[in-house]
Length: 315
Image (cartoon, rainbow, N blue to C red; front, side, top):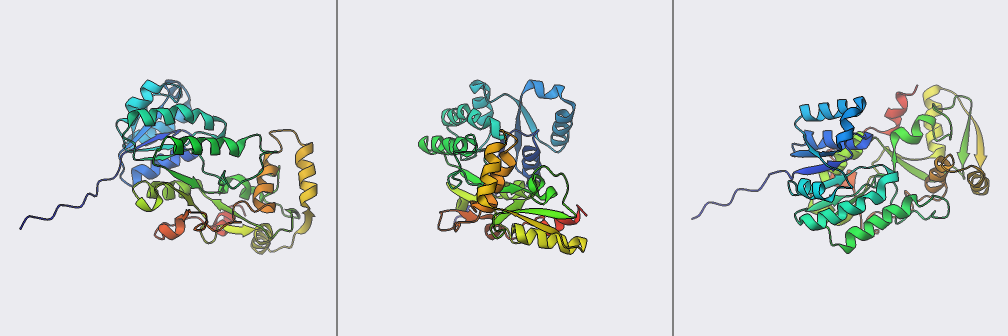
């Protein structure tokens, strides 16, 4: 009788774009830690920036392979893509539409088995605030439709808020640290938001790349211990500092007025708070009913930082 074929346990090679950014760097580290052959597309100008150069040195010391190229050079992109099976883009929100040439290059290369575009926030198809977000979410939806129209296998990652974004101020616009006397609560304070540390977002993302359960789906991150309303966040903080805070409630109408009166981009922090903690766009739908999958259910072995643990670092 013939021997059974050996199972194919090889890890897919991954190309990451945007590795010198905060999330991109964590994605590259997570890819390397998970033993994926890891390639980083880097522009030549990157090496003249000391901080970015240091990050690249850390990654190459760990085994990453640097490939020279840019989103605006299709030739270099196609050559880089031909070396890998998976592409993850982590460019910042202002560059989302710069992924159009990348989608074109992926189609031309013809070898990519999974594309994870730059989203990593609220689900743009479920966040309906186009009249106030200056196209922030519609641009991400535009890339989704392009990926789907081209028939490119994909996973979208909806991690909601990064923990480093609003939690250091306890969701207080303009503050750099949590309040100790009085706190502003938006809406009725009962709508839940979600916060995930960038390092944990990266670990969940890398876990999806060879997983058939996440193919052509949205991976949502709502892990237990990271989903709280403003009232709950304030209560946790009060317990930690051993003191009750004076609470000032700001209604939806008052918040909308303040958003309109504050110029862009200074008002965007309030726009995001409105989307999450007033309209509930992070938690107002069931993941499975939306055709998505939840990261902490798929990968229960992954350890992540909870909000209460993170708040301990702010005491």
